Amino acid sequence: MKPTNLTINGARLWDSLMELAKIGATAKGGVCRLTLTDLDKEARDLFASWCKAAGATVTVDRMGNMFARREGRDPKRPPIMTGSHIDTQPTGGKFDGAYGVMAGLEVLRTLHETGIETEAPIEVAVWTNEEGARFAPAMMGSAVFAGIFEENEIKAKTDRDGIAFGDALAKIGYDGPMPCGGRKVGAFFECHIEQGPILEADRKAIGVVTGGQAQRWYEINLTGQETHAGTTPMERRHDALLGAARIIDTVNRIGVARMPYARATCGVIEAKPQSRNTVPGRVFLTVEFRHPDEAILKLMDEALRAEAARIAGEIGLALDIQEIWHFPATPFDAACIGAVRDAARTRGYAHRDIISGAGHDALYMARVAPTAMIFVPCADGISHNEIEAAKPDDLAAGCQVLLDAMLRRANAPA
Ligand SMILES: [Zn+2]
Image 1: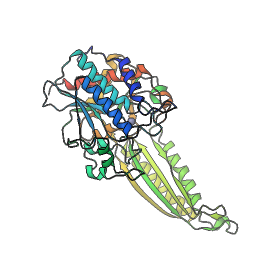
Image 2: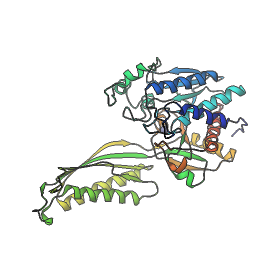
Image 3: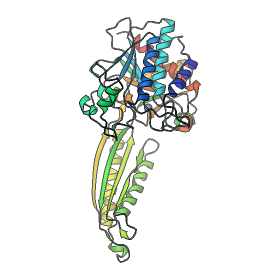
Image 4: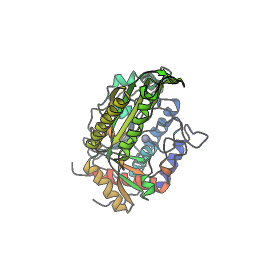
């Protein structure tokens, strides 16, 4: 790696994060800035004004994704891109998403003030509706950019008040003219707080993210028989809730047996008929599994199906398991991962490889561009919470790694 002495300004990065966090600030120190609200518009306007002051041009596509571009010596080269999101959860923090965007802004500012020219253009993206809190699904902007969803299908999605995504986008004036996606991106890097406890516990400033884990989501319906709780002897019962209880325990065992990487969760349970003196006859249950390795996730799938069938058979229940979603494992690009790792090593930051446990725009960008992510620790691993916190030094380190990795890609031979 060609050594670079270009240094980002950690204090300026922190100040910008704190300034952005004022838009939608909550009493408990967090941020509530739901996508496509007036607050979102205010934050977008501020980001655009900062980027223009740093010499970048800002364009908006038809999904409201924003791109702040600093031209390269060769404008025909595909841009080296970074970015994240500035929408938040209803009780969100100051750093989730905002850090990735402000780190990109700090890269632009550093290049601008030093007058450094790159071969390839540099772009900083703001992806629309990453959180999925107001409009589902999550990561809409990057998904359409990557060709996963159709623009019109997404624009028709409505929030709980019946407002369509497309209408909300037009209302804040961010229904841009540029087509969404369909252009080449040379590489994509995203800085993000880890949103988990691993880096902090391991005392590492930098997480070199090697990929995202696969997910499989299921809906299970168990059907037994509703009978009188006082007159039905134990051996004659077909108790659907008992079956669900055993399946919940089994799901947990499936995860525990594949630690440390597996995740296994039952999040929703509905028993019917909700009467304390009737044996429950019907249960709806959700299961989600995650693992970075598709082959192991398949073993978890097989174990769930076999164990659930055994449990249902023992109690005399009809079992219906539907897999409703399968998000494939996303290995990041070896060269981009290498650029991040080398930058962390060259700068002397404590670092380790890590898998992304959460969804990120980078996971969709990885389908259309060489991609990697940079994680920094957050306090107690807590995120999607108003108390979310991160240290200025760690945030600066992640931003420095971002700049170094982007410069390496942007100045690599075409
Ligand atoms: Zn995020």
